[in-house]
Image (cartoon, rainbow, N blue to C red; front, side, top):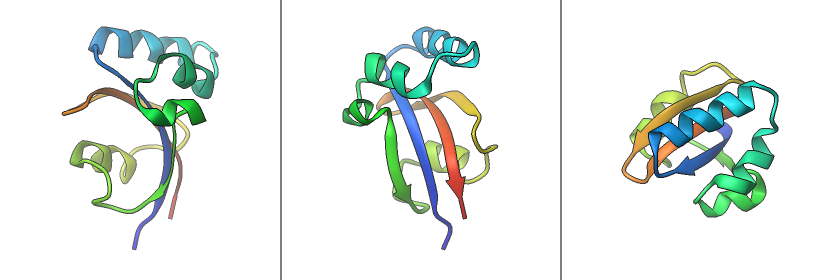
Length: 92
């Protein structure tokens, strides 16, 4: 079964999500931005979600995590929880 590790940042506004993505692409540390801005409890760990398989996260996550490019910031990704930036750190 496929497995992936990823980290994310959750905010409630698409424009804020896009602005944070620009900051990270401009050189800011993903984990630092997650700690400062993410409304998910994982933000305290720099957005780290650990290891998971297909179906363990919401569908929108799975679509990105199990097909997107590794070590690249993806998003904004809209889910029922808000807007996410996702970074896939590994996949097997």
